[in-house]
Image (cartoon, each protein chain N blue to C red):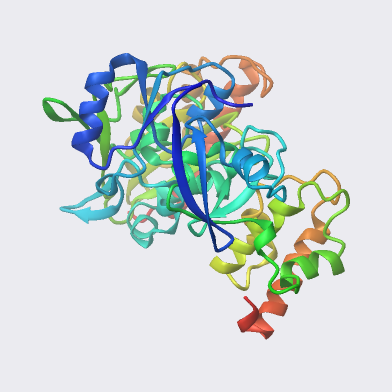
Length: 288
Length: 163
């Protein structure tokens, strides 16, 4: 399978990429790692007239700590995230999530910004980013704006990113010391999308939940935040009753589409189970 | 005919230059223009790993990489593993441990295992399984592939110069 013909552009700077994007308009697509876009082009689900390859812009890569946040260049690969001692020590939820994405070869090409910008409800970064309360820096011809991950994803393959903007940076507030975390992902095989997955970031105070974020992968038209489940846990211990109620409330927001991974009832049930397990694992890791 | 691009890269240590359309995938350039048919085309959707090659020190699936993206790159394929007629320790180990049956996945397995051992010269069984998770084999059940990688790791540790 060979993609349809297109014109290829490899800008060397962000400025050059932005002017290309503005001048080529909606006929152009940004090429990051290519592991979603190129397969879609082979299958003729996407037929852009122009590809703007972001791989030769060094400023878009890199991981650094700055003022209590982790700053990640959008073109940083999954393999780079996984190899980063800073990511593992400061934001272990991200490291755990990335380790479950695709396979080693795909992680060498696939980028965090590409995974986010594609807007596929099956991608893992959206839930991780919402659980971590991340923000995205979007750069366009008129400058930058910063938007919260929560609210960024509008529907399948639809985000707040405008046609003339590039996602350039991801900013993650480093969780407070003692925070517990877990990403629980059910998948049929390596490289498959999640049947259902749940990302949890948890802060305990003594034996009670002080703060919790729960985000769900691939059980709706877009990533979902399980707000009622979060609220139900505040001020409570993590035990069989509170876990059961949180899982039930997480399931109540699921609207999965039936496919070869299962029917809607199965996927919803699995999302409840992933949420229960993620909360349990996060509670075991939390020190409050 | 669409516009073409001049692309130069190092293939197994030798400079090569091709003139390709932007949509040409690295696997096709290797097999059809450069007569390097070691890397195989399996699924064409970046699942099976039969097309795995090494590009700038990373394992990549060459069915999901545009040749034009490889300008200036260093590409290593299974043809580049042996040195002066001597099989690489991994190739020898796959032979000795029966790490292949039909052989279709083998070039991809070898290239992925090569990079895995560069990154982690003494991997545990679990690390080998995780490290080779992007390469499918429908014959062996993987047991002898794991044994072969373990055997190659021991051989390479005993002769560091051969790596």
